[in-house]
Length: 339
Image 1: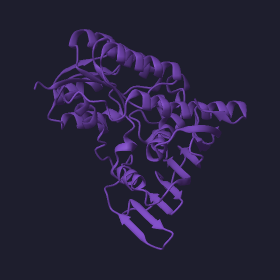
Image 2: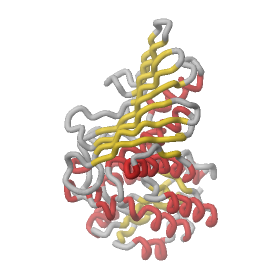
Image 3: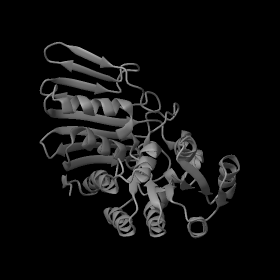
Image 4: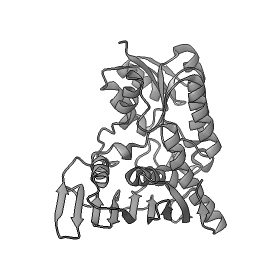
């Protein structure tokens, strides 16, 4: 079959490290356009991979008519760009958080459905080998029910990761809308929903700006109650200046599962009967060690095989609702029921 003609909108770090190289290495893809307001960035990728460079995504959609796009732009643009692409008949892979309000997320899902295109959200944590293995172990029943948990994602912040460093859009509230919670917290709300196959029913949160310049949150600690009754905590931080953490621990009826707590043994299962299982199943990507996320391949597979994407818009919306509810809790000082 003919190749999927893909355009990448936004040529910052997530495109540089993940989307563009992963599309380039996928045999079913032809990269046809790159878009960035800093046109030189788009031109650099066009020169390397072929295709055209654009400063404006609307012009690109009209001229190139791509089969699919990746939306890798500041948070506040995700919805408008995704909807425009869907209306132009393109399948959409959008970075997380998929949107900045629930209404936006709903509109994106509606636009994709109306136009008969696929909408996938780049929640790459689901596809990381340790999390895939953890899900299999949980579903085997060997640990019984999950009773309580802690899931956390902390690193030194986007100042070291973003292509624009400390001057990045990540720190400008009108463009980012939310900080560490939108960047990292939403990964963990998605992961815990996925691992437990359960929905968040209620949250209570402390969210603040403790150490970074700017007016977006750099730390959050959220208490989470699941529909099953399990209770846990979700932590997001941009101020783990030493000791980056991307780990999850699940305490269950029959033992404990530790994910990402050990440099080699990515998944450790310790049962109450004293037995211990250690799994070396590939690492969790970090900002300093980029491993293929699997997101692009899953997105292209869903187009080529005409299947539901691995992480559809509906899933991205539910994970976003948890984060939005946490902000509401911080603002009101109340426990918030999640829709």
